[in-house]
Length: 366
Image (tube, rainbow, N blue to C red; front, side):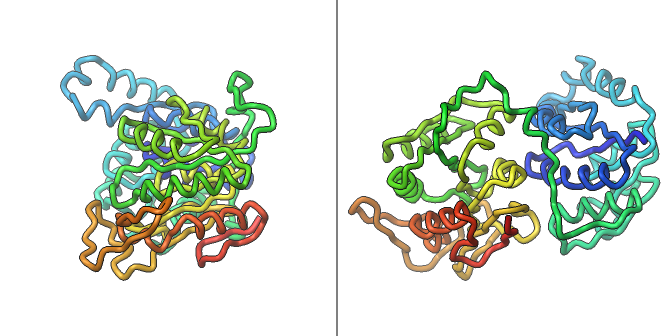
């Protein structure tokens, strides 16, 4: 049976879909998948052995100049590529109007969520078959549930396998060093309210170095590069990597000992690789979209206004301060005052040693 998955973005949402592909492939051995995905994330579906063809789409780029994109013939070329195959099923795993429209453009019976359990109910206009999946489930389980109903198999909630074939990103040309022991810190994110304070990253780097770990830092724009350099300046064994492809990042990750991360898409990639991950949440709520899998620990703020789910901090209480290298500083966003570096380091150390850490959080033991 040939199936098309429509899940175009974002990074975390695409990764959340992988366990459902694993479930379905194991339950129905004759299944083979193609996948429509934003061009920036096209590497990811190809890492799964059940995915044959990845069909890139450039919605984000086309929206910037729609008339030019239309005249260039890019959309027509995408449609032609999409319609090469007649699919037994087309599953919209995104639940948006745009993904529903893409599903309808494909050739095959369309499947999606019902209008009571979907993010944008108008998308259901494009479906031939719909299934109701409870809202209160984590995003990973919602998609797994949709696939299990679509293909009629029993879902085992006690296991979760992203199914990634590490051989597809363990490229020999990546020079990671021999026997190097390092951690990866994901400090960049799109919301200012999700940024852990710079001084905390600097102190955590010093704690990691003192324990014998190197640290590798990524960046995606000029602000993130400046922050990465500032973090690196506080340590003695820190590497600010050049900009990397997702495949290269996965190659670095699979060799790392553990990860500390803010709420960002790459955190979900680390979880998919079953790495020990401490995820820091303040403004956002991990209950339905947090990192998911084995050896995951969510540190949630105990501040009364958290999670505010706002891009701009609205805290109006007393200034919350902390100390770094003998100097006092104001902790901003304030909700991260409950996430001091020593506590974060203690949790990561416990996870790497096979324990649960010292804070309550969503945790799936190895």
